Image 1 (cartoon, helix red, strand yellow):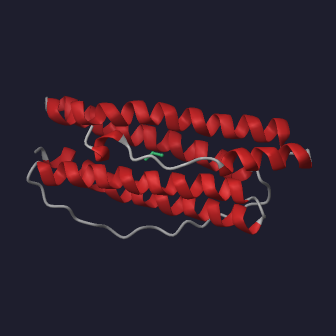
Image 2 (cartoon, protein in one colour):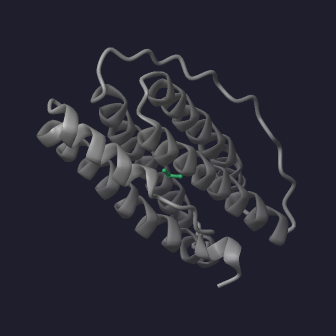
Length: 171
Ligand code: FEO
């Protein structure tokens, strides 16, 4: 495997684990705010991010590459409104999309078609991640200022359940 492609893939394990950590901090914020449905939504999101890290890790192992686990940064976000974490989430997902695109570009440069193919799932996933993040913002803007509507929104988020992503489910 090309050294630059390897480095970006290995780094991405760290970036995904940081995403899990970041979303766990959002879950903590909402838990403290009494919005347990939002907390549930971000706990599941954190679980998905850990899964993303595992998918990159597995890919390196399957290609005979050594995994080097790096230190995970501390999420240092403090929030002054229910909307703020949702906006931070969209910004973060847009950043992750750029990271995935960078790995794809590096793989394309050295004609690493296998890695490009592997990244296809993440390219689609990022579209969904950004779309979800945008919907969370829109709905909070629409309903967040009305207590009853916010309660309903929280209940809806409480219903989110975890599903194993396809690459880990062996599909
Ligand atoms: Fe691992 Fe939210 O993208």
